[in-house]
Each structure stands twice: as C-alpha cells, then as structure tokens.
Image (cartoon, rainbow, N blue to C red):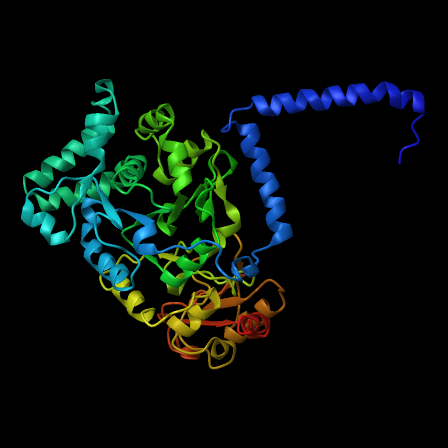
Length: 456
C-alpha cells in the first residue's frame, strides 16, 4: 500500500468519494444505447469470455425450465420472392423432426416481400405468406415516407410478380432483396408477437437455416424465458453487436414484451429500417434502446455455415450446436434433416465428422490423405505459406504451429493454408496425392479433445 500521510488521505477521501459519485451519476444518466455503455459492455464481455472460455459444462445437469418446442416457442421464418422455393423443403425437414408446431400456433409467420398473386400461388408454398413490407408501408410508417427508394423498389418487384413476369421479378429480387430484407425483421417480430402471444421463446430464422431439435431443447431448457434475453451468433463491433440472423436468433417472451410495450422505440425502428443495411443489426440497435443486449456466452452454439463447412475449434468441440445456415441448394435441407433424423441427443461440434464425414476424424490425420479441403473458406486467423513442395511439407508447416489444426495444399500454386479450426469439407479436393488439393488435420492435437467429449 502506498505510504500516504494520514492528513493527505483525509483530504483525498472526500475528493475520491465525490469523483465516484459523479461517475456513478454520469453512468446512470447514459441512455441504454449510448456508445459509452456499449463500449464498456463489449470490452468487459471480451475479458469475461477469455476468462471463462466456451465452457460446455454450462449446459450440463438437468434442465431448469420446461420447454416444448411445438407449444412454447414461436418461429418466425424469413423468406423472399427469389428464395421462396426453399420453404417447402425447410418446413418439411423441421416439421418431421418435431421442431415446428401447427401453422398458426407453432409457427405463424413466413415473412415475405411480396403478396401471393392468387390462391394457387399460396398453395404451392403450403403456408400463408405475410407481406411484411406492405404492412410497414400501409400501417407502420407515415405517408411522407411512401416514396422512399426502398418502397419504390418493392413496388417495382410487386408489379412484376402481379404481372406474372417471373424473370423480371427474380432479377429484381436478386438486385434489391438484401435491401428489402432489412424491413422484414421488426415487422416480422411484431407479427409473431401479436399472432403467437404468450410464447416463452421466439426464434427468427432464414429459409436456409436448419435447427437441431435436441440441441435447441437443451439450450432453452437452461435459459429463463422470464428474463429479457437475446441470444445468437454474436457478430459486429461494439456499436452494433448483434446476433447473426442466418444462424437463428432467440428472443425470450419477456424480451419481446419489453420491446413491444415501447411503441415509440418500435416506431423509430420502422423509420430506421428504410436505410439500415442489415436487418439483424437493426434488431440489436433497437433492443439496445430498451436495455437488452446480445448474450455472447452462448454464441458458440450457433453455426453460420452448413454442417460440412462449420468451423470446429478446440474450445467448442464438446459443445452442442443448435443451428446450421447456408442450406441453399435443392436437397441440402432434406439431406441434413435425413442425416440427423435418428439423433435423440444434442449434437456436438465434434460429432459433425461422425455424422457428415466420409470417414472417422482420425483417418484425416495420416497418409494417404483423403480428398477434400478441411480448412474451408479462409479468414483472418488462417495463415498462408508459399513455395511449399508437397503435402508433407505443408503438413510439417502446420505441425510447427501450436494453433494449427488443419492444412490444405494447392498443388498448382504451391500454396499451403493452415487454420485454427477444422471443417468436414465437401469432398471436392481431389484424390489424395494425385489430386489438385491435399488436405489433412492435426489429429495429435485434436485427439485429446475429441476423446474428452466421449467421457460421461
């Protein structure tokens, strides 16, 4: 302790108390969405995450809260005119697994950016389509905004749909769809909250998102819906840290109640949706205004990629995975649903090899290396080596780095890519040493963690 004379301490004490009082009053005076609050929460959260890590034990033990997906959870599915063909396959996969309850009670809202031209068009999808943008324009925003460029783009696309010009409607959807998507989120949430009242949880997902039922049940069973909770795959900077919409977003019933009892906040969100780039970020910035922030400790349970491209890291290998995103091609959703059809227990990240790989994980750690790319799309954490001779040389580069878990060698360019994660891969890498790409994993590093998941 500093050797400060008693007389000096007596003088400094009231100054320190006054300073703390001023800081405390200043903190209380800050609005919930102030940058000061957001920056402090973000940085403290980073420190807590480093200290805590992604602890799989947080979901161990008996569930504290009873949740029945069919009756206690309302699902909001977002789609667009250009991607509406995905809906039947997604609804079939999720309904067969018992994720979705009956339309109108379990999942009500399929939010689109168009109105079905006729009854046969609606029957082709098998569900009622709620045109969120039309509702925003007609009842949620003043007439002074009706000529906004996004509404004009919506009217252009709607005109093409009504005229039966499929080619033009699809072109407009591909061109403007990402802009119009930002208008769907808040309106979709309000529709779900009003038409599916008193749900414990509400889940927002895209039409290319798959939910793993046992994993979702486990997660929700350990969360209290009576608290305002906002959960998902957290991305973005401190000013607008948000749950990635494609990975699925979980909102407790209490969070929805808090938001929709603040009509002035909701009304402002509709105005902001006209210029917001990402609707899922708008959800976060709107919730910030009522003091609700994304809970990052559960981020690692959500995948922003399909199963074969999901990044398996050593700190999440034993954790359950709740969702997969990016199942866009015909048959993708059905294949994932069929592969997981017999699964009764939560699916762990480390089990993705067993479920979706051609061979056990350990096989990818020795020669001859099976076909495929087990690094996947590169990112900031990957490292690239040039002038590499062959697969063995690439593997040696990876082995010298303690963080490296997977490597891929491109024969044509002589480049080697290493990553601190592994992916199952799509099997398009070529035939071992004779193919254009050679890839493998560091099984010596992965084996202890993989075996740890199998312990009771």
